[in-house]
Length: 517
Image (cartoon, rainbow, N blue to C red; front, side):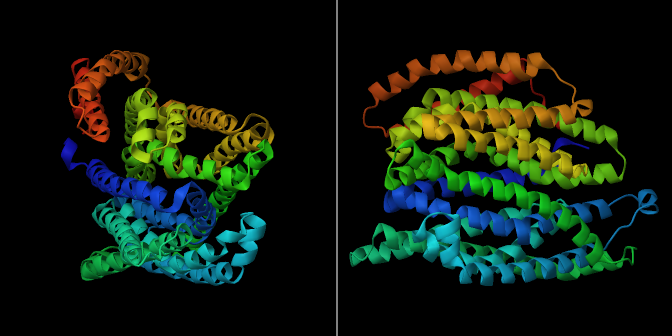
């Protein structure tokens, strides 16, 4: 199969392009939010995401993955199908929507009713109550979108999820900016009101994405039904198979989501123990989670897209007992995740401080970006490794390793942040991510054919030379074109470093596009 004909590669490229577009919009939106909310209300806004994350895990994350895996596992050869239970993709989707929507509606009612308790007792910030009530309205829309996207991931068709992702992001931004712009004429705007509008924008975005997903699937409904009716499927309960898999996935993801939420909620609390005021603690949390972390996560659009498409691909290979395909996928995943990770570690180490100052007008954000730069290769690698391990059906292993890595971060947060401040948390984050990556790599070691020279030594050597040399070019452009915005200069330098890095990797045969075919 040629490179461009691979469903996995085509799907990854589509999701990557959509992810980059979406993240560019989201990145500009983060800058806008930082401006209209201020660091304190940005911190309050970020605090509602643990509630969103836990609820989505219950009604959407597990069922989406279950739908994707069941559909991918049902798309097997005739010889394999004789010995395995396969189900109609169309029935899998409808059953999944029924389960997910029911859970989402129940959670919406629960969260709305107990919003004051959740804000005061769980998030430890009473002001979040109004934002949580607004957040509750998006759950049903998000549940339907999650199921439909899971269906398309399962058949390795990324066009609809990719388009929905962009539409959701554009709708959210347009809603918030439109209302804030209208209110600014009458001087009725304030950081508190803007935070309410930003939360409502999440619901507006999810509604638009859900509507698009439903319309897109309905357009191809007859095609889906025709394909389903032409194949032979097991008559055993789809509901039973879906519930069995989704409950297992959801239970493990829920514990992980709760630990993530504990981590997020404890950051401001630990900083208050360190001696900061409540306002300053929320400001630091807002800078870290709303400014620095999105910068580090921005390049992961590539590896995240690959991970999403990789899971059903690995599940299908496992069902077909195609172990050579699994070995090739794991090896190439490790190689290119590292190569991409080294590049962004270099960029953030050298220019992270300037990026924080230029994009957010916040030197503190730049300092956090520089420290977190070392996360990149480990973060991108563990993202794809976790997807592969889940695709192999080893979800218990990913649960255990993720819990261990989160326990390390929470230990740093509870024991060391009150003594050493936010720097201890950043170091703990790096240590936990390295630990998670090595545990995952050890589990997959029989599938990885390692080449330390081409994966680590040469890429890092090239980046050291390019990165150090780029500093003088940066200063030359900065001094020669004083009228040019520094944001553009940073973009030019980053593009030049990337292009030269890719060229050196190609001529040294560290990368070869043919091997992905």
